[in-house]
Amino acid sequence: MTTAELQQATKALAAMFSCFPQSTLTDVEMQLRGYLGAVSDAELADLKDATQRFVLGEVKSGNAQFCPSSAQLCIEVRERRVMRELLARRGVGLGSSPPQSGGEVARRSRDGEGDAIREVKAG
Image (tube, rainbow, N blue to C red; front, top):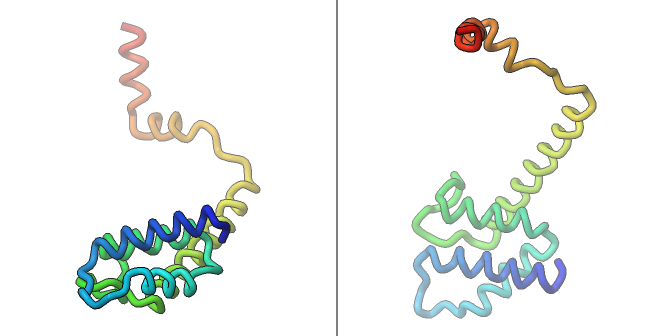
């Protein structure tokens, strides 16, 4: 990650930490360093997606009452990367065939909506 990305990653992690209870004995700076070290090779978008999923309680393996461990965060970051790569591959595959035109017109004709529109225009 670049310096700017590290700053954004720090903000994303701090936002996640603020959503979970912290022990009064926790050294937040050391905690941030540990998490940043664990995800330093990750893409910023994957890290942001992972932290957001933890905050929203969407990660099944995480305990919604406590901040995830750095290992849990790394697992979710890797899953976000895999999903992003799969979607990118799918997008490439879809882009190779020309889009079908007239889908809306065909649906309206099939559902009889085209007749009502024609009657309003004619009347």
